[in-house]
Length: 384
Length: 102
Image 1 (tube, each protein chain N blue to C red):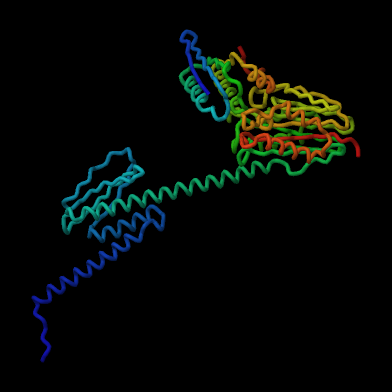
Image 2: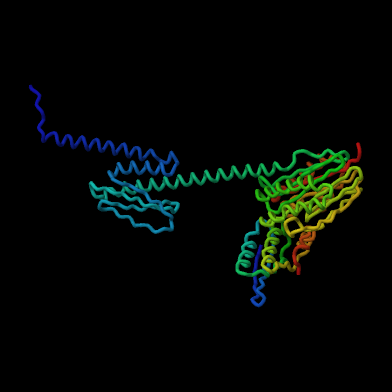
């Protein structure tokens, strides 16, 4: 039997069917692509563009556009019908968006409504997810910067300890957060041991940044004004730091001291710091401040306290976070308890300092640390 | 911490009375109140600390901030009715020399 070509009227439906199958296949592929886009790229513009591209194929639309809006802003109501469809959707976060679709070939009908809604929801969801990701990323960067800045500030505390003959020094600060405003630093010559102990008001990074400025100011004051003594060095620190402290609504309590080995003299200049305790012959006595903290009044006039030290004496300077540490009953560690420990000179300086921190931890129990804690000890051991 | 405010129109002076523990955790209401008063042109403020038994360095810094703002504008922040513990803290830090205490 000879091949005969099918009649033309039989081919037309086949072409139409094939065409419909190809189009349906394209739509299935577009639907698959749409379903697998999710927000894997996590870039707002990219994921939204991909969703809209697949949505355009599925809807056979000429144009598909998403307008994200603030929750507050008024926007057009949804309308489907004619060659333009407007679908307004809301995310559970409160964000809104409007999807605008245009199709010349065929007016939008109710059959398109679900698909328009689905594409709009997916696109808005992608916008929201990308924003969350962006915010999380920003927060992570900020947290990393914060941690790095805190670490840098804490690194301004000296790791070395003075080795002036006839003295033993212990210094430790435990910040309440990753960084704190408590500080200590030292400088020495063959005959002098100079030191600073201080407490910047407030906690955390702002206090820590100011703390590192105070240490820098002390080091500079030692370089430029050491011959003038602790009170002059403290005045210099005040002169350099008053304005920045005042602008930041902070102040810093500071003790600057000098021990001169050849004469056995200890000079202390105290701007608002407490407790500062001098132990001599088993008796503890506080050394009061002679002027307000640095940053409160411009141009402080500290007065030095002069002491003649002997082997066996001790100078102890704490921050208020040490003595104001509360126990489970809400009672503070207190100056008296501190002094009762300080009079014991039977233990080596480093061991004693660590023991005192352990005592504080035991006292605090589960109350937890609420402020930066610092302990500086200068024990006078005499000539070996 | 409890915070109450009264105002004397004749002298344009406000009195902020505090009660309880005044520390870093209780700072915001006090700061907000001082900001509100100074922004509305009140630069004579009495802070009644009669009911405060403890204040920490953060609270002291906040009092200093208020004091400076008042003085910069021709007024003052005056501390009144100090309880013994608060008086001791101000003496130890020598802040009693910086504030006007009535």
